Length: 248
Image 1 (spheres, rainbow, N blue to C red):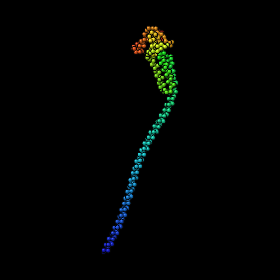
Image 2 (image 1 turned 60 degrees about the vertical axis):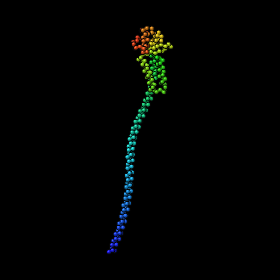
Image 3 (image 1 turned 90 degrees about the vertical axis):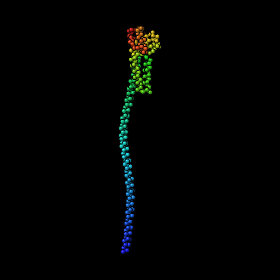
Image 4 (image 1 turned 45 degrees about the vertical axis):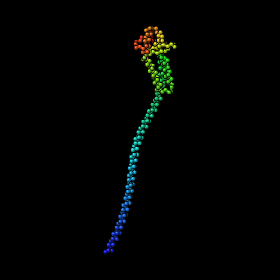
């Protein structure tokens, strides 16, 4: 009986030892498996993080690509617009060149017509007006004066001549080196008065000469007209000789 018990005990110990070894082996396998699983999980986590980075980079790149396309489209529109503007500018330059070629002969004719007007007109402020014409001629030959400025000063000279028709003035000038007071009534009439108030006359447009005035009423009206032009007297009716000898 004791022998049987011992055998049973040994059998149990052996079995326990075997079981323990198997348990140890199983634990090792489980531990190794867990380690591998952790490694796999880490790799999966790393792959997931990398995937997220790649996805974020993709979204950023895609957004940049869209913005680049929008920008390029806008640039294309701007370039197309600039090409059209350049064509328009080229055409404008051609038109300007043609205009300048046409306007220069026109300006020459305008200055020539002003000069003829001064030569044929009543000889008031003759030196001043003649000098103005000469300055216009000189300006046309100057390269530092732009065409638009040349045209402007010609128009200004025309305006000055036009204004002469709508006002009266008195000034001093000379006839045969003798100084007189002059009275200009628009472009209609021009009178002179000596500084000692003894000599009077008017410009006869038909004969293109000075005519002496002896009529006392005409002399009186000339004196009145000079005062009105100087604003020393209110505007009043003037009875003066013009183109005929009536009333002289």
